[in-house]
Length: 591
Image (cartoon, rainbow, N blue to C red; front, side):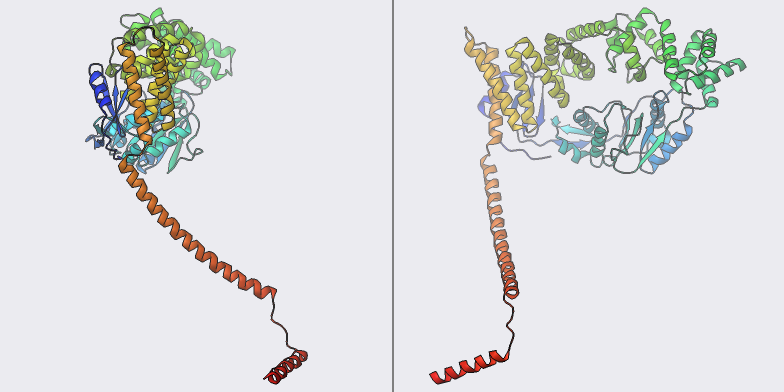
């Protein structure tokens, strides 16, 4: 951790802190500043001289989803993965959608040879972007910070360099460069990554990497899987039909489980599929999959369709039972959720429900998403009015999902309302990549609404964030813009300025002063810079002397070489001898 400068708090800052005491929601140390959060007009910066202490947590972290209920057909690949992990290799699990990559990762995480294989534990992630926000939460998985602080990427790299954890990533949308960033952040950790196509080796993955390709289970392994779902053994005739269906779906575990659930609920579906296969002896797998999903949805009741429509509209964002209940209306959605899960249409991760990813594109075409998003935005706006940063924090992914839709639909009033409500939670939750994106959305919404007060707030927050991230130019420009807007409001008002307007100007002036001060060296910094300048001058003079000497010697040697080449030694001849004797006689006569 870098030591901060001992700048004394000015009287204006101290006065502002006192005036904000009743509205402050929290504080955060960032570099050489304390960030005070809670004022409606924006955050306040105060200089400090208090380094952050990192204390390693004394326990092993284990954050993984539950083991799969069924796991068949990939035992050999599981053994290979365990051998690779014991050898210190990272592993990439490659396979088509529906082949069982998610179940494979969960089974691997719960294997007794793996659960205790890494001293710092196991972490499972379904998303890793934005990587800057993940870095903050990842660091605090292993460390306590005293006082509460936001650390830079350089500081976290230093703190996590020796971390030895097993990182499991089921994030098919993550870009290879983002995966490499995470690998560089945790150089001593081991990774297991699920991918539809190999992507790590081509991206330059450092260290040893084992690539395992999951194949669909064969027919023999698939029969017990289907029998388990049916709750009984297969008849001879059903075994023959299953062979045809296995070929139809290319042995994909997820599709066979969905099919078995359909057959369990509607036994006559055996005959329906037999008739269809007779008419389509070599069916396209995508067509067969679509037919299966249509069959699964035929018997859905209204609450089940509402829930599926809502989760489809959110495009991968997960909801809790309580959120589903308040948005869709059923008092107890649990029975509906359980049936949708049995049918393989949704799944649950950490008590949150979402659509199964391969079905998302097809379901999006089946449901009108706009009514559900409008309903969700309204519900979440009402909910935010009574919440604190602590309760908002866990729901930020949901809120960002609705906010992103509001931005796309140009619902500027909703964008501003949600952005301002979640601002403190984003700051104190250290999701600063997302914070910057939300502030940009809020600024655009303020322009569309011609709302100068909200525009000034957005500029104030953007400038404050930029200063804390050491972007001095952006910080000054943004805070200057906020100051001009706030001053303009006061000057153009016909009545006396309100206390809120005066406080807003004071906050921006205080933060702008920190920007100016950060660009002007303190006496101590000036002494250090002067000493460094003297040292550099001495080094420069010494270097010039050496260069001059070397240049002189080189020039001297070159000169001798040129002289010897241009003026060669004269040859002796008898004529030269006579001339020399004549010169000698003349010299003697002169004497």
